Length: 224
Image 1 (cartoon, rainbow, N blue to C red):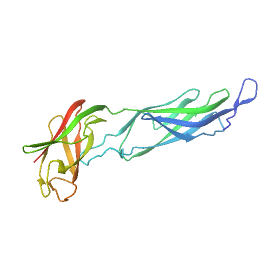
Image 2 (image 1 turned 90 degrees about the vertical axis):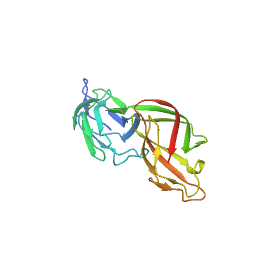
Image 3 (image 1 turned 60 degrees about the horizontal axis):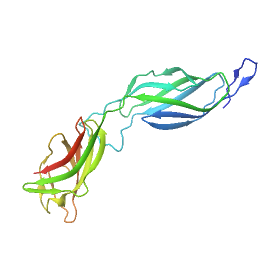
Image 4 (image 1 turned 30 degrees about the vertical axis):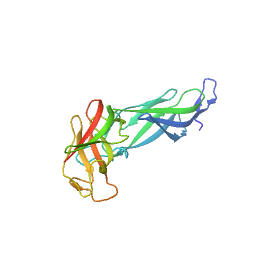
């Protein structure tokens, strides 16, 4: 990309943005280098607030909008204007195209253009499960290899898949699941009530709400 900029000596300096690096949530996304016939580069950044496919969300929980607090362009480029202006909140599934006008340096340059989109990062909590214990009446069973270290959003949801034959038998029915504080049960798959209907294996997914603070200790799941 060549951008004509008159130097003090009457010749044109060469300015080349070889690649556009956009930093968002600690990750780098790239766009191809840009061209301009003036002293500016007009750049469009499409942004879509899509749910994290690795985090299970429920209809009962409204996902907070993504809040872009600022967009910064690193030297030697300069941000001249932007539409829409930050800060801006973008609701889930909504798409926004940020239109940036960027000033190029007044001297010869060949290299990347670095842009950072700053956001309100969600607060995370550290969950360290020493073990998972299933309790059914007087029977108590520890699930093998159930220790885990989990980083999850404050009051976010994490998933535990557990083989029910650790504590239940064929045709047993579960109508209620009890979790002690600081955890809360959000849902199960299959939904409650469920009956152990497979003679060989019966795995249940427990969707559990994390607390708003860190936790270290066992996870006890009571089955009634």
